[in-house]
Image 1 (cartoon, rainbow, N blue to C red):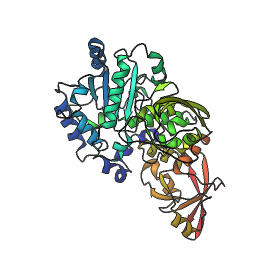
Image 2: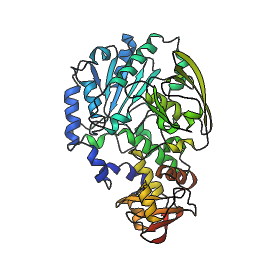
Image 3: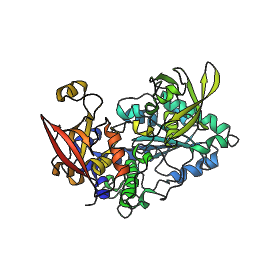
Image 4: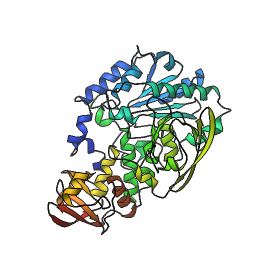
Length: 442
């Protein structure tokens, strides 16, 4: 089995111990129950985006499209509040044409570009296809029981404001639109085409017939890899969270700053706690996902201009992005990172040593120290194990270099500088012994 095929099966193969804990036990039943409950719901159009755009255009309402991976437990609390007929969101949702999408097979990628690693994402459009806002929450993703809807509500209210000003405000929306892509739908991607059909197999097994959103990112990365090309940094570190530039946002609000990390990109740009981010790179910010989209499209090095509200007045700030800034993004919890772990690390999952562990091994904070928390055992994720790597090995050198790096930074460095088939020399600390090994790039 080639890597592209394997990375799309990762959730049902060797990583079961890590993935299945985050999914329902009866995946098939969950999808069928969702279809039975929602297909006849008077508020929601079920799995039919084309109809949604048509009704939005005819009614003059904005279009709300919720993309939900039903078997995944993450964001379950938020999803429950959104679809609950008794929820206090009801009057607000009724001002939209609402569409619920549970699979990505035929998503129009010329319109639907978002954080593919989330199990609950929302895009809000005008009926003519113009995108108003994105919403996606990593707080809910990490806590399935989180039922808070304050930030979601604020995004919906902001989108209604944008809708009322449309089309006069069209210029402020240009940066929100999806850039051109080489493939119209996920099932046009080389590693997915022929394996999935446009329609789900409701007469057979539904779940295996579904393209999950994270598979889109997997398939794009595999396409670059198969062509022998470097994977672009935005595909390795997608949709950077605010923390990447040193921001922590107030929970439940659109984009108000709670804290700014000292000496961070945001701090050097002049941002302060209490500031509200209004626009970034000319785009209206209605959610954390909108902020991440601005960062997603930002240059690899250069400047991004932000408009903030401070003490009731708007102010312009400029952030300087140094080379390699994206690699500060924490990708360790992303399901899409599992495929990259196979490509770059042969199936290793690495964690940074604690201070106590560094003292135990005699390693200073200024040196590399990544411990193998998990060593894969199946398919391409078993390559490191076959090369001699063991659980709890500590990587202290890669290609003769010992500068400290996170797992994500190491993955990004290897994927951008090396191609499949290359062997990377690695030194690991194993107890009191140092062992030389090699990582095969895939």
